[in-house]
Length: 458
Length: 152
Image (cartoon, rainbow over all chains, first blue to last red; front, side, top):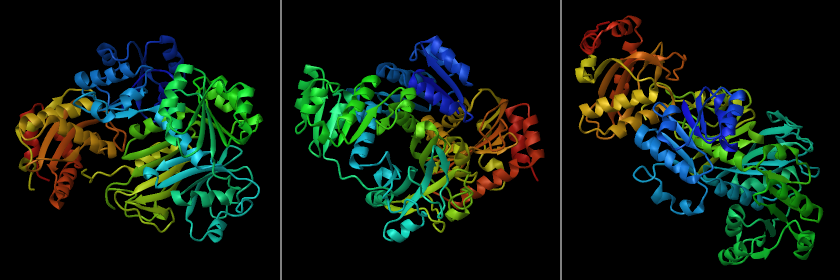
């Protein structure tokens, strides 16, 4: 596919890196020639220097031939305008835009359609990050909780600990322990190396286990792998910006929430928006404030300011002062790799955004892509189309499907029914199949496997 | 269907079309068909062809592709035949760029007869001699004549 990426920032750059290796023809546009040069040194891509929404820049980037435009510059307005220009002048089939401002997002349905602002897919990173954190707060002890099929199925990452009944035993024992719960372990990472689990794989302490189960079974499966933490009650949020405020609003009333925000005027806005949460004016880097606000009884401390360094330091402070769990927003991926045990969960907005973008870039009918382990692994949900003749998947038992190495099928969602992947399950047309790839380089093979053959109409 | 003349017209036959990419090619096809058939909209033909391609390439291999999809309001199966000035990347299974295309649009209702037409066309285009004579046609009239008078 010919894809134009507008903006060579963190998201644009990482996306180019993902896609350049997958037989795509990528052109990246930015006003900063230096940034483009650095990117081009590493990747086989075309670059164009210029204003991303200008017709002549888009033309130079090959908009006439492009299958897709992905607008991820720092400006919402430039992103939207670029989509409009591409639509009107170049008839670009798929236009994706990042839009940050909640002001635009509040009118998403009215604004963004072919007759008005012609954007096919809107990516709102703040909303994605907020949902991600809310899931983590709702599932104590999980490192990652990812939704598939509107949340009917979830993929959960946990670290196995002493005391989990299955730790030190073979995976197939889970079934004996909990005959009424069905789950599938999709992958295990042991000292950062992937293991494709079999029934006789023995779970070891410190393994990072990814399992798939229906949402109602998640807690039961987690309890097999570790002593499950009590449901969280007290949440402290440092930073009342976009993400902090949206998160507080979405859990307002369900938890005891305290929001710490520096700016007095922002505090006033927040306290009007939040009915049950307590808004505190001050800095979460102040030990006195943390002590006064009972940090030692806080279940989760979320550092969500727009400054990585502050977030990391505040989190370390909060953890040392007794917060049970800390969740930290870190945009710089180098920092994310640095942080150790003091930070329980590092959240990377780019990584979350990339997954969401890839959902629309990949070939096939894909409803979800989650980029995992700093982009090395991937979990995807795709719809199987065709019939036994036109598809290599439909009409076959799961144990007959020739999966690429390092790929496992975790579950199938058929209408409202969740089927955990067992060898005898037969794939039907329009099934949503959830796959785990320990190595994302396998994605092309997965796309080919699920591609419909010649005799399929639409 | 006995011959391609049941679904193909001279007006929907183009010899050595220009346009260097899949996207521009689909624009050409959509324009050709929507101008020929008033009932069909340019946007719908374009969007449906692109959407079908997204699920899997309609490339047959050896430089041939048979893009096909269902279209609302399509009165009956419609074909369009094109040879290209320059071969373009089509993400075909064999990776070969494509320079010979037969487009097939069919009505919305799923019918076995559409699959039969498709497999008949595919059968024709799997014959090297047929494709070779199509590629040698110098103009649209010759192309149409070759396509509709071919006998195995």
